[in-house]
Image (cartoon, rainbow, N blue to C red):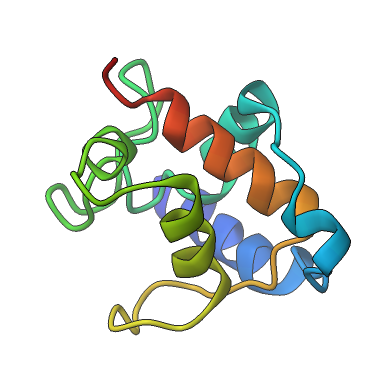
Length: 116
């Protein structure tokens, strides 16, 4: 059942989340609460997205937690946006074309995990 859930989630990420990031959407600051919901439905197969996550990633220690990503010294909203918008060295990570709102919301949520 768990495997089926994650396979369905991957299909949703790859197939259903489509959009073209426009310059207009790039400047939107995003909503951390909406970002938490988005990453909870789309990223939790590989990443720990929250301490109270219902289902843990399929493979532990496979991908860094979003908390760890947020607290890296070089992480900024700009570096996250750039990273999530294009292909990079992690070829096993799905690359959906995030809508401007989903991208901004995910970045807002991840940045909300940063220690003050």
